[in-house]
Image (cartoon, rainbow, N blue to C red; front, side, top):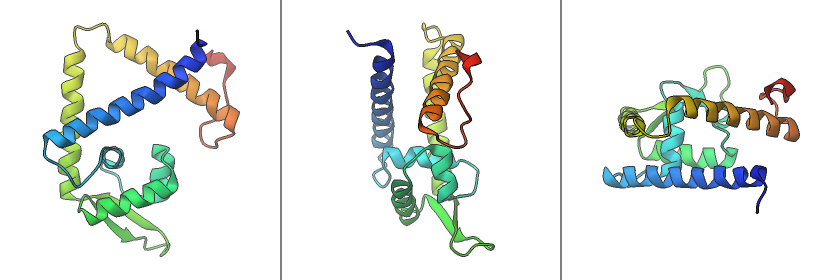
Length: 159
């Protein structure tokens, strides 16, 4: 029987893949073929902001080369607009185009539908809040073990 810690690691990975499947179904349902599920999550996370690929990598915990490729594809397919930074010509800033904003709004509606479907189930707001707290503690623990900057050290008081 696997240890709970090890089981959690596998569960997080499976949940991530399962959620990407949900996104794929939503894109297919809408007949959207020019953006994939990972790209749609990057787009969703950009939101109303304007940022560099580096900032997006830090914010979304994506791999840098994958973000660069995905941003390029989203620009080519008119989901993102890009422009060189006035202050640093090497830096390119991206923001959602109207097409990207429309897709983000559709994804937001999907999230809202899911929240409505959760009402009356055992997945209460309280339980989901407790789960978020636990996952944030695990994130800080892993950050402390890997020395990842920006997430702070592990706080024993959180255990």
